[in-house]
Length: 248
Ligand code: 13P
Image (cartoon, rainbow, N blue to C red; front, side, top):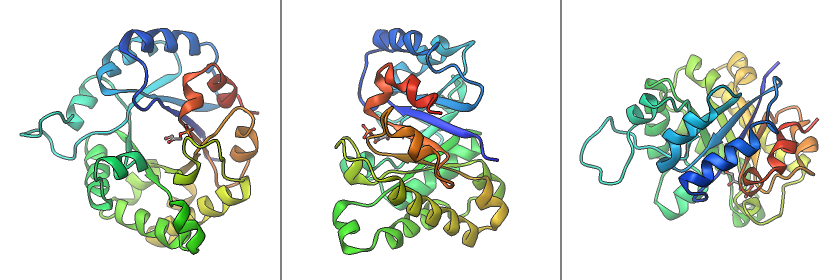
């Protein structure tokens, strides 16, 4: 049985002092033994967030990282820097990074490989645009994203990875995918992993749904057989996140 993983993606929200306040506010609300709980926060607040979350069930993740060990990459953050301060997860290839910061499937793959080298679990994002959905190419597009993201990733690494299916048309729009739409794609992702690796790997990898998840929609989405939790944007910044974590 796969353990659920429910992660918040804070995006570019909250100052460092607000981060401490929000973590302290959410700590009792997200306390559960039944799921992994991850807060992915802005880089500048990572050290403080790791400190603030100590002694709780909250693990801290980054929202991005570079794929090189170090070097002349002004403004970037190296995987070893995350590892050094106790960051255990990193979101890779969020659609906002692909759209606004020119991330490609190839850079996503390099980052995934690098995260594993440092023992950091990548949350690998994929998802189609509204146009692609209307053109009927959703599954083809996502299979391509997954196949490239997992190039040269070993089966053992893939088993430990997290994939977040986030349809772009559902992000920040209040238009949540139906549970049937989300399940259909998450199942296809699992089948794709089975093709690349084997059924054991496919059965182990955790696949989240993301896109306008709220306390009202979480229970039905997370009850789908191939949905192992969520990657939550807006609602992760509010006490509602506690209800999403304790969705049952
Ligand atoms: P919303 O939950 O705000 O739609 O954001 C989803 C998302 O992009 C999480 O990574």
